[in-house]
Amino acid sequence: MKPLRMKTDRIAAVLLAAGAGSRFGGGKLDAMLDGARVGARAWGALGDQPWRAAAIVVPEQVPLFAQETGASLLRNPLSGTGMASSLHCAVGFAQDVGADALLIALADMPFLTADTLAALTAAHGGDAAAITATRYPDGSDGAPSIFGRGCFDALLAITGDRGANAYLAGRDAVSVPVEPAQLRDIDRPSDLS
Image (cartoon, rainbow, N blue to C red; front, side, top):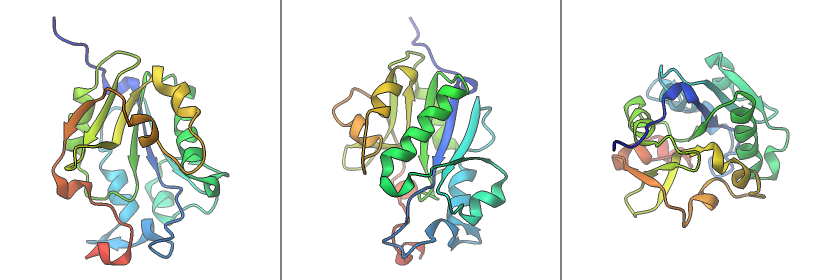
């Protein structure tokens, strides 16, 4: 029997963009990379998929790239308390729009492609407890990832400066290998070159 696959119109897609970017010196998501802002390139990877809904989690001081996208913005007034607060915003959004799953992507990963996210969604099962994650070269799973609605309560229980990777560790996830160059993130100004 062929396993169930979830359609993109049942998935809420959220780009997390509320971090301080302290190693960069601030403002990394608005930094220019090959003619476009870092965050805008990451948002562009969400592509034209017919998501149930899509949004960007932002801090109170909204990055310029997010304003320019015209996307739905989820303001995180607690962004200074750590990554978990942004994760909670994303899960709340998925619940509010009645999504069966949540795709989480990171705004400081500008090299991901829409094709990679499409492969991730194609690999995601229709089970409420299903987890699909990007496989990193070191064998670990990470963002972008998709979590079925059966995972939402556990994601909401994460606190402090921990994100969804805290939940992924030790879980049985469908892993989707991705070209390592797409997994580079922008942490320091030197990462732009």
